[in-house]
Amino acid sequence: EQININVLANDNLAIGRVEYLIDNSAFVTSTVAPYNERWEIEMRDLNSAAGGTPWPAFESDDPEVQPGTVATFPDGFQAIVTNGGVYFEGHVIKVIGYDAAGNRAESDEVRVYVRHKKK
Image 1 (cartoon, helix red, strand yellow):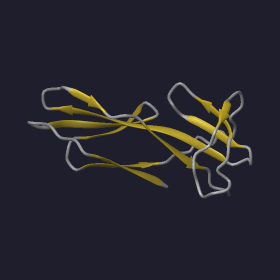
Image 2 (cartoon, one colour; image 1 turned 180 degrees about the horizontal axis):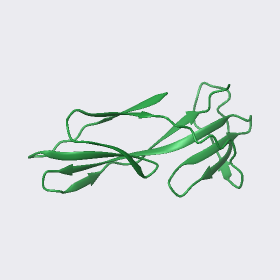
Image 3 (cartoon, one colour; image 1 turned 30 degrees about the vertical axis):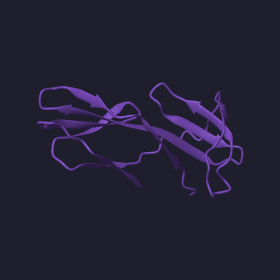
């Protein structure tokens, strides 16, 4: 499984590079437009949210997406177990763009939820 991350970066002169971060850790840097990268999802497979706090869920047509418990880690990673026993992982995606002069701009963080595949 993968998530495609597409970045629209522009500058009045030139873009130097774009860094892609997952859970506050850099996973790739791109120096050539278009700034599109693919993140191959690697599940941490904790299958537990022990010691976590209530999680309200999110709107979904899937009846198994329901409230539960979330454990949030310092890097932004989340382990979520719904009241129905379904395991999700939450990840934070962010990019940092640098222009040719070294100035930087950060994107807003985007949280994505990945559902654990039943085996």
